Image 1 (cartoon, one colour):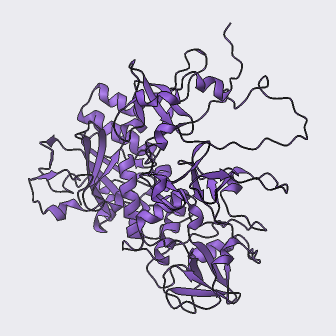
Image 2 (cartoon, helix red, strand yellow):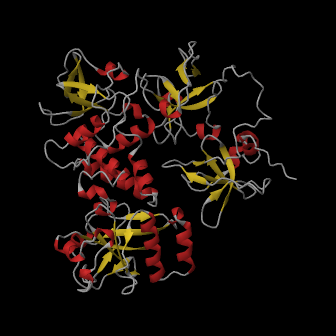
Image 3 (spheres, helix red, strand yellow):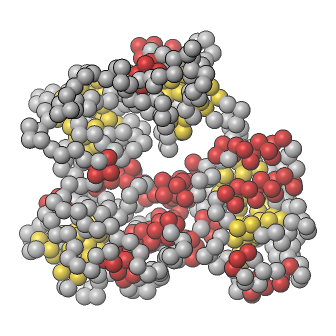
Length: 569
């Protein structure tokens, strides 16, 4: 009988991992795919912190680690790392880190062995910038992530709030308690000796936060906040932050206190806390202001690229909430305004968007939050409210209507291209200025896509869009089902808008539109009530709250197929 005992990670993966000393024999498939072929034609994926592991492409386009020697136990599927030429996978329950047979016998009181650093494989380390380029030997990859060389190998690090270089990983904010220091007079680094005083074991979530003396309450919704462009738009966000605990907020001496100056600097805006002056993100500051964002001395969150990279690589540099209560500014010590990069907020909420659309949408939301490419405290508050609304649509309201849904953020191409009745519409490029289109990745919904691919037709395309939009939280109306195969009507609960998606023919890269937007809706349909909102369609049309969309299937020059949606009006 086959051995069905749990296998150790090292045993299972070692047998299907390409040897590190022969990485030069692998041929990469593209510059950023993270996939390689071996001389014998097998496929390998560069798996984060594991090496180059044998994989197989499945019929639905996903990549799976084959465990042929354990036919009763399926291998894990891989997930592409965002913006990185690497992959990750979730370990199956049976693939434990160690089994009882392999575990050394220790007493219950024996201390846990220290974690070992994770080193970069030599092939990847060779792609980094030379250590000679910096005085301290710090190296970077093309995404400006930080690495240092040790005598045992190259490790990825990030600078934490205590100005220590700590082991880091590309696809998670978790950092183990492994620290490095430069060997004086050299560009080689070494692991710092662990502290001699016992430190209580912290959870993975605690390791992502700054250490403070006491825990403070996590703010939760008390009443539906709503922000607009009024001067006091941050009032509701402030009330929400304080609503969890009307008593005193944590005043422990956190690391942010090192940011203060005894003499108020001439440049920038500052608030005073315990006779020290702290720089804040630019805002309209007056006696009625109750919310501010404390700015880290080493980082300004003004521009999108720097802000997004900071949230991904070194989130401890992000601003901190400061609340004014009883004429006194207090800082929320252990509550970061942003838990993850903007792209992760988007991909977590809108699961089917392609990586490229996620990236473009993140930039558009950042710029739209402050209606400028340079963000202020007002824009940061709008971002916070937007992400909170996405998480809990039933209790909260979006800060602005267009930020409630990506489809509302699409540019109106009908008026911009100036086309008239009976003309065609060019499909905009994904690289066009602003948010001109949204693309859905068929690899994220293979079941629905495979059903369409078996019999591609306008009716099956409509059904495909219907399934995908419904899975992503939209409510599909049956209004057009018996009337038109190329029109789809849908809405999202709590959003005061109705979407009309037309699926016209594509000829020569252009969408054929023989009629103007709106003529698809007949007078009989105007009286149809939409879903659970129970609003007549006519009232939406009178209030100009109908959004006309065009969609279809497109394959780019690289062979990547997506479902696209653009806004017609």
